[in-house]
Length: 166
Image (cartoon, rainbow, N blue to C red; front, side, top):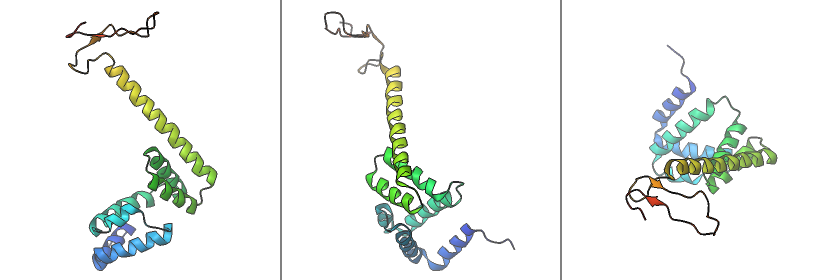
C-alpha cells in the first residue's frame, strides 16, 4: 500500500471530522497563526464547503511553493497594494512581518507594487490610444485630420469622421 501524502491525509481528516468541525478548526488555526481571521474567510465560514475548498487551494499553492513564506506574503502584499485592497494590504503586511519580513522589505514590496501598477496603467492607456485614437466612437469609422497639437493661434480644430465630415 502506498503511503499517503499530506494532501491525502488532510482530505481523510475532513472526511472523518466533517466540514463544520474542520472549518472551525481551521479558523482557530488561522487566528492563532496570524492574529486574526480575514473577513473573506469569516464570510466563507457560513458555507464551510466553500471555505475548505478555498483554503485547500490556497494552502496547496503556498505549501508547495519554492519561495519562503516571508516572500510569499511580500508578494501577496504587493498584489494587494496594486489591487488597492486596503484590508488585504493590512493583513498581508502583518503576515509578512510575522514571517520575518523587515519594515524595509515591506516598504520595498509596496514601492514595487506602485511601480508595477503605474506601469500597467500607462501601458493600458497607451495601447488604447494606439488602437483607438483614429476610430470614431460613434460609428467606428476612421477619423481623419486629427491635429497633433494646437495650431499657432491656440485654437483646436475638430477632427473629421469619414461618415460625418465637417
